[in-house]
Length: 239
Image (cartoon, rainbow, N blue to C red):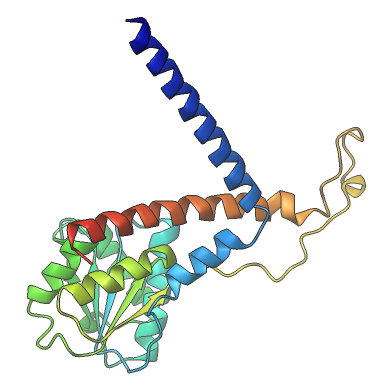
């Protein structure tokens, strides 16, 4: 019993040590641009449109209104107006008959942004990226899998999406990552101008601490989660 207890104690000790080192490493990286470039590279992996797409596929696993849902609709509408001859397929899991469901609400969002209703199709059976690609490759929307296809999805999800669709037979896949755009305004300020407690350190001119550090931490979570997803999909033979 004592040996088992000592082994368990050592395991917990090493686990805490590794967790602490990982935490400090992630915090240190958040003061650099490494998380951003990792995120950026995932979004731009094989995503350049070289030929006008015959089909534009909006890939989503979230509802609407939501931050990601509205970004997807905005980018899809913009791409659809750039290539008006392309069909737009909304691939969101759920009941298509539900007028308040994510798929129908997304279609309305596209129409509000100038997309003709006749340009829109749906695929609502795929519950993950692999299944969405499978359903679309086996459906009636695609007569030829070699025709140009553009995927609209979040930046961190782009690489896995492109690889999934290629694995399912699509040979001409590009992407439109839904990158957010930062404000052009200067957000620096003098704390003294806003009054308040003078004994608290001033951070008005420190954008690194106010925004960039936390943004990079968020990107680290997205990137790490996506690399776990890529690893799982590769082990399963889905990409």
